[in-house]
Length: 386
Ligand SMILES: *Cc1c(COP(=O)(O)O)cnc(C)c1O
Image (cartoon, rainbow, N blue to C red):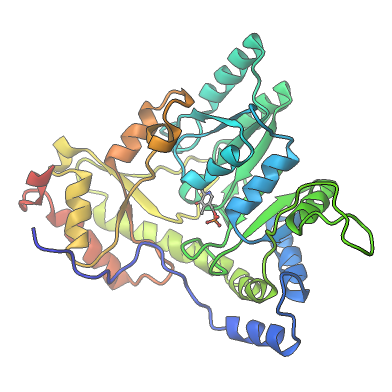
C-alpha cells in the first residue's frame, strides 16, 4: 500500500472566531500577562453562567483540573476510584498521581457511557466487602452525557463523591441540565481539539464555594495568607494564563453555534449513510442532548462488507483523518492488572467504532465526500485488509 498523503481534513481542528485577537490585545495593552488577571476572572464568571450556576476555576489543563478535583475529594494513596472504562487516558492518569487505584466500569450500549447497573452492583459489592471507593469519575464521552440520575442516586446512597469529566461535553444537556453541574465537582478541557479551545487549558467547577477556593489555593503554589511566602500544604502551578483566558472568552461566546454546527455534521452524515447495512451511529438516548463533539459509528464487518480499519485507511488515503473510538482503559498496557467491572461492551465499541471528521468548520461538500468514501469501501478491495 502506498504512503498516506498529508492530512487535508482533520478530525476536530480548532475553530478561530476572529474576536480572539481583540481580547489578547486588551491583555497585552493592560500588561496583564500573568497567570491571573481580569480575563481569568471574567472567563470563570462567564463559564459558570453558561453552566447555570456554581463556581469555576480556570486552570492550565483539564488533567490538572481532575488532579485537583481528586485531591479535594480526599482521594489518596491506596484509595479505590471507580472510573469509566471507555475514555481518554487523562480521565485516569490523575488517579495515579494521587497513588489511588482505578477500577474500570464498562459502558452501556444505549449511551456508550458508564453502565449505571454495573456501577450500582459494583458499589453494593464494595459495601459488602468494606472496600468502598472514595470517588467515582464519571465521563461524558464524545459529547454525550452519561445516565446521571441512577449513578448519582447510588453514589449518594453509599456516600461516594462523584467527579464529572465533562471535557468533551461542554454545551450538552442531561434531562435539560448541563453535564458538569451534578457532581461534587467537574472538569472541562479547552485543548485544541475540544468544542472550544484556549490552545490548552481547563476548568474545575463546583457548587461548593469552599472547594473551589481551596483548589484555587492549591493551584497557585498553596500560599497561606501572610505577607511573606508561607506554606502548610503541597501546592501546584496549575493556573490559566490571562492571555489564554482572553482567547477562552472569545471562544465561549460562540459555544451555541459550535454545538449546532457539530450536531448538523451528525445529521448530514446520518442522512447520507443511514441506509448502509451494518453501519450504526452512536445512539442518543431520549434524556440526552449530545454536542456530537465527534460523529461516531460502529461497523459490523459481515453485514457492511468491510471492517473499521478498512474504512479508516480508505479515508486516510484521501487525506481524511478518522480515528478508532477510544481504546478502553482495561486494554491499556499501563493499566494492566487493574480491577474492572465488565469490559466487553467498551472492547467491542473500540474494535468496531470509528470517529469521523467532526470539526465545526467542516463543509457540507466535505461531508458528502467523506460519506461517499465510506460507502465505497465494501467490495472495493480495501475490505481484504481486515
Ligand atoms: C481532553 C480530555 C481530558 C484532558 O483534558 P486536557 O485539557 O487535554 O488535559 C480529560 N478527559 C477527557 C474525556 C478528555 O477528552
